[in-house]
Amino acid sequence: MLRTILRPTIRGVRSALGTNGVAVALNRMAALLGECATQRQQDQQVLLSRIADVEKRITSKLSYTQKDIPEYHKDMSERDDAGALLSERDLLCKWIALDQETGMFLVLPVTTDDPVVAAYLRGQPTNAYMLDFLRLVTDIGDQVVDLGAHVGTFAIGAAVSGRRVIAVDANRQHIALLDRSIKINGLDNVVLCHGAIAAGEGVVRFREDGLFGAVDYSGNSSGTIPVPAKRLDDVIENLGRGRVRLLKMDIEGSEFDAILTGERLFAQDRPMVWFESNGPTLRNAGNSIEELRSLFERYGYRCFRQEGERWIYAPPEQIQPEAWVDMFAMCEPDWSRWSARIDWSWSPNLILEKSRQWAALPHEHTRDHLLAQIEAHGLDVEVQDGLEQIRQTMVTTGRSAA
Image 1: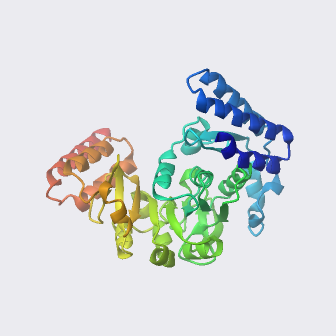
Image 2: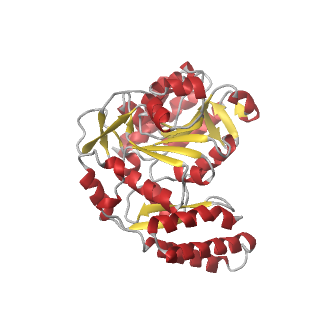
Image 3: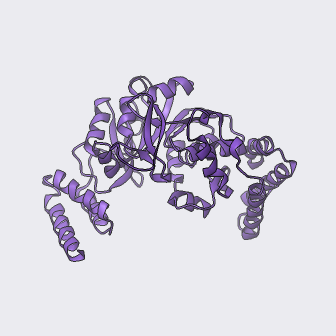
């Protein structure tokens, strides 16, 4: 089974790197993984060490030059800078096991201050839970759209899992890394799109900051570059094939623009939506958590938080203690399909417990977010007294620290 799964990867490396040595190494990796699958308790450390050796042999063949920048960067005035961003970095091809039978290669920069990239370099797939959700709610062959594809932890994993993927990102380095990962995995079911989802036309100013890159909504941030502005419906019309079953959004405050420019998608395809609900970035974009949930509801959707195996409805007026949290939105008939998992109310005790957890964090922006949420939602009689106690403690602690 593992040999079968890895054959496209082997073909991709042979095509992308043009070396029989690497292809032979990957064939050997398939054999090693087969041994892992059948003899997991026997000499596992030795097997993992041998797999790491194969990774190094692939990595030794990776190098970026200016010609490696994809064709769709040619109309960008900063394309020379994009080449420099990659050619000056050492790259690593990292094998990431997704489950007992599947895995993927990600091409990553060795030197990074991006916490997600750093985790994957350590072999810790911190975004694996998103792929668990993908496999739960979609089938092989379904089309998914990844807005804010980053370095491909979701997009490449979804493609390896047999889904058809449109991956969108505004960061030039992310696109170039994704392009190389697609080739090394031998994937023909991923389409890349460089640009920022925006309600406007032409170009927008974008701050390339790894995991935290974002559109400059203020208009006065330094270090921004122009990137193509993309309307969601246009991206899908130009690059998609058939119905979109799942939309994933992690675009640092631009989620509002994605919904507004995806009117046709939400009216016709009615996909499930996995998104980051980030209070500070939504505020930077001139919106709010409450407005985002209300916009979803205007399209017939409801937002849910995932707590273990339970999916808990999050209406617009409900507090979000976390400064950022992954949520998802869905409409009928998905409500009925997943009704056994859904709770239509969030326990007051759980609300207060989550609020206390985030109140204990030392970061000023998370505290400011929670204080603003308590002020906006603290009149809920079921949690009013508990939230007021948390607020007073936070204010007192903040004064003491000052």
